[in-house]
Figure 1 (cartoon, rainbow, N blue to C red):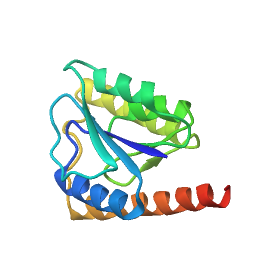
Figure 2: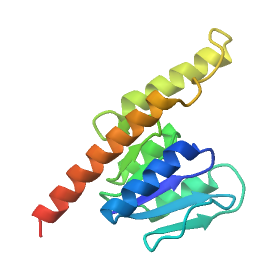
Figure 3: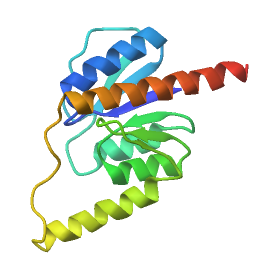
Figure 4: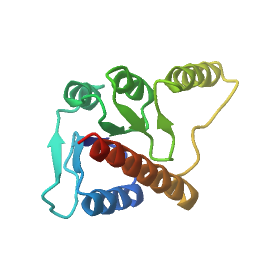
Length: 155
């Protein structure tokens, strides 16, 4: 299993927790961004810099992701694309996207965009806080433990 992070705009508090988890569980992690991502060197952590532009990082992640991988992103259309390839997506507020829920999440995102575009709703998501960080790490740990347990039981 590989973890890919859509790293542009990824909160540093969540990044630190993610790094601790992948080091503890020895899972491969790749940050994909259009600028360098800072992290302590580790054998199972790397980064990939892509050119700037709309969806270039997303397209690269979709090219690389394989069934069973995890992509961490706040981008619901990207989550939809990776779930369609048999992978999973987790946003940094702790929401796990799967085949069972991604279409509903995408429809809700589109509705919210229409409401904002029509002036019926303003603003975006709230600031990333401790509650979000805790939800992220709880869902990440739960996913990794469950996924790694299933992988080990198949050997």
